[in-house]
Structure formats: C-alpha cells, structure tokens
Length: 214
Image (tube, rainbow, N blue to C red; front, side, top):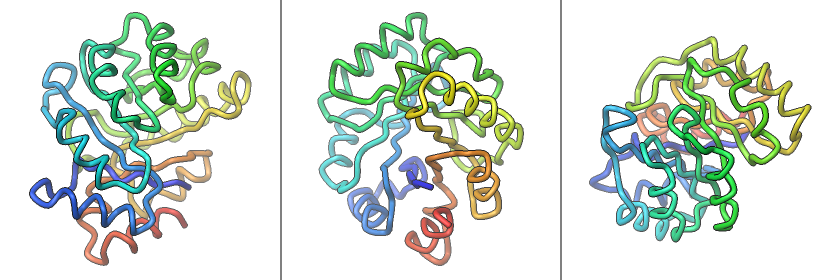
C-alpha cells in the first residue's frame, strides 16, 4: 500500500517543514487538493503555494482538482510537473480530450469519482488512465467519516481495470485510518490518501504512515 498524505490537513503556517516531515517519514506521494469554491464549497491553494510545496517535497506531487474549468487549472499547475493530475468526471464535459492534454504535458492523467458516481461511468476511459481516485467522503473538507460503500465500488472498478488496463492504479481518499485500511487493502486499493489521521496522530507522522502501509 502506497500512502499519500493530504496537505489539506497540514499546518499551513509551517508548511515547508510539514512537507519535509511527511516526505522523510515514509510518504510515497504528496497529495494536494485544489478547490475553487464552485465545484466544492471550499477554497484551498493556488500555484504559488503549490510551487513552494514542490520546492520542499522530495516525493512526487499528486494534484487533485476539485474545480470547474479543469483545462484552465491543468494549464496552471502543469509547469510544476506533478506525477499525477486528477479531475472529477462529474464536472468534465470532454474527459477524453482532457486526458490526452494531461498526458501530452508529461503528466499521468487520473479521474476522480464522487461517492455517488459508479465506476461504469468511466468504463471506456480506463484504458487511457494511469489512476482512478475514488472519494470515500463527499469532497470539500477534511476530517470526514469514511463511507463504507466505497469498498464494493473498488471491487467493481477493479474488475473493469483488469479488463481494460491492468496497470491503472486505484487510489482512495477520505476518512482513512488504521481501522479501515485493511479493508481497503483486501479489495485491491493501491494508494491510500490520508490527511487528519496522519497530521493529527499523537505518535507522529512516521508511526501514522507505517500503520497504513501495514
């Protein structure tokens, strides 16, 4: 299991040290949530702050767009050369075109599904993706409770991936902790995104991350 700590739960007043700390504590990716206040009812950060994160990070960036006008935001963040840029299928009218654009910029394209969106909605796009991110909370805010139905959703997605693109990874984001990580591992999740569990853990970041890796 790879672990991608979500910066949304970090101390933004001490962001450089927070990023360095998770990278040195076993993180595999640095997950960055970009929210525009329209697609979700929250605002987060722009390219200036993400550039500072990139300068401090020793692990690849995993940028999750929760925005309207995805193509505009892809152009904004592509110069930072993240490993992944993921966008929500619920918002994008031309997903095939956007996947091609992201890949042409040397970045791995990924699609995100909200809790209510079935995996079958992206059946004919899976062959072109490097990753699918399933939300196990309603997007917009950290610290929410894990939605158990995502486990069945992972199974259905896994079946489609095996059919169309066995190299495509499955990432899950929302409410993940040491109590439900084994369930995610059992159904075939490749990457766990965790925010509050890692950044608020009393035993420290390294302990929290290792407890998710198993």
